[in-house]
Image 1: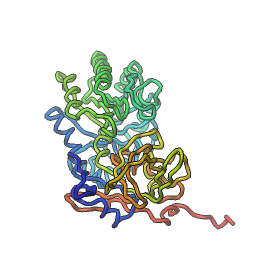
Image 2 (image 1 turned 90 degrees about the vertical axis):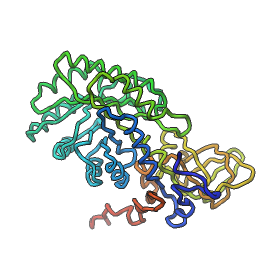
Image 3 (image 1 turned 30 degrees about the vertical axis):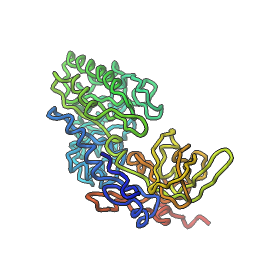
Image 4 (image 1 turned 90 degrees about the horizontal axis):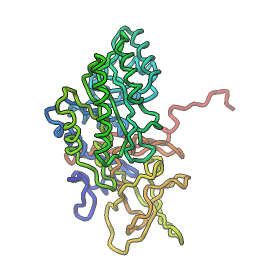
Length: 416
């Protein structure tokens, strides 16, 4: 059951009126449901059951400290891709020992900090990275736990920008190269092979590609066993999609299909879900500034823009847009666009709606890759973030002020 629903003719979140939130906090504003986040995370925990596992939330999806604290309290691990995300996790109360560090461009300083913090594992993506990590670990005289991210060349049928499992993608190494890297790591005094990792992409709405990729990993694990290398965990990534528009598989069905493949293996199962934890738990509130009818297109200009929610402009992502207080009447076709000076600045196109100037709209499914990808383009302050828990409204991210836009800048005296 969704935490966002119509009550008394208006959209609510956990029983709180979104109209009231907009009146108090303004727009654009992100609104998140604590219950929806909790339920989505527990859907993974409950599905895996008693099999050894760790659900590592992908911090890049939404890195707000309150959301990280919520998940840490539930026992989550975390998948990070920068030292900034690692520090966020620890400030929010997350356990560094439950953190996996992914990403193709880890620096030596990031490696040192992660080793100091005592993370669970580095997901290594290249030979060059592995050799640098070995050198850093030796300098620190400590062991670096590693898994190799395997690129199984599986086409998950998703958008090219969020596909990560093909040979043409920058992520991971092929299976043959991975075996060589494990041999190197096994012989390196300060590297400890502990797992294998694979992430084939985002917004995958079919379980079959995951099973194909898993077979590649299991074959590699068997080959490594012949080399005398035993691994502790299997990281299957976090590419399960959500139902922005098309139906997504149930988390329980997805997990069950994976568990069936490893039923006879004593391997801890790691997941890295991000989008499927927070996407549908969030909505972006925005107000219609102007209606601009035309002969070819009709535009509803709203106060949220591509700097607030980039996904539609970046790769044509579709997200549902609802009127907070739906109007009766004859619907017309509108493009919902923002005020940023780019033709690509839109939140939705060809939406059948009954609109008037001043109406409040909610862009649904905005909990993932919304605020975390927001920017100050066109010198626009980033929005407020609200978390609703037990019908109580919490401000978890204040709206930036105009002066916040240049708080890290300075004009040297020499500049006339």
